[in-house]
Amino acid sequence: MHFDIILNPAGGSGSTAKLWKSCAPLFKESGCTCTVHESTRRRGIEAIVRKLTSKGRYTRIIVIGGDGTLNEAVNGISDFENTAFGFIPCGTGNDMVRDMGLPKSKKELIRLMLDGEIKREADVGELTFFKDDGSFIKRRFNISSDIGFGAATCAYADRSKLKPLLNRIGLGRLIYLVQAVKVCFTAKPANMVIRCDGKGVRYRKCLSAIAMNHCHEGGGFKFCPKAEFDDGLLDVVVGTGLSKPAFLRMLPLAYKGKHLSVKGIHYHKAKEIEMLSDTPLWAHTDGEVLGQTKHVIMRVTGERLRLML
Image (cartoon, rainbow, N blue to C red; front, side, top):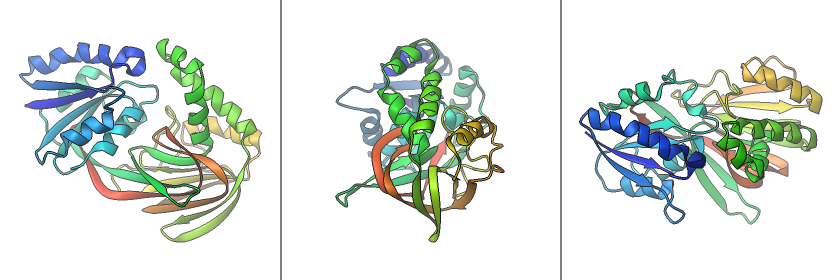
């Protein structure tokens, strides 16, 4: 059995390289062979995965990293049918594993993948991000894509000089909490039209609109508690008309998925969601920020991520 191991050696302040060093003996002891591919500034995770999966042969890939690294990987897959995918979480959020019932132990997780067999399949989402000049960008996502509050929090957290320091001491989530509070009190609500499978609803004073494939986002927030990653649908939650203090009070409820009964929270399921805003809003896929836009479309692509765990 052969695996292609992919990692960013500088990821997580060097923790990904250390994690692989501790995991490598498990593959060797099982009789498996591995080729390790390390990303560089010139050749990122996405480019490595694209090259590996465009050769027309069956490939078993294991990615070591956080949700952002997994996002790069899924955007690089050229041939989903001939790609067996696995991962070893090593990031700040690690939301992709939370609703999949996977073991927390890295050793147990690896043992699940050593036979190379497909255990389950997951939907793949896609964001179309429209620019002011009429052009657009398409990016796949595993977990979620949203505009407004969540994406703004990611954008400002990524810019923070404290983030690398907090990551090194294992407190990376703290910067997101700090920025979330800041965004809550500084963001301006937008008026939006949201179309779910063609049926449009106009919302006023929106702070957030999220489309999710998995139920957790942002390091454990259960924004879409009914989401199933293999049902062919995206779950959508929209927050409207909430005062900023009320929105902030709602967040602890969202961490446990108990916020859906709050007045101003709206929930939908759809294969395709179009969002149009009267003001530019930050947008992201799996925490990777693309910029600000007034128009996005999120959809389920129909491709399936074939998972070895």
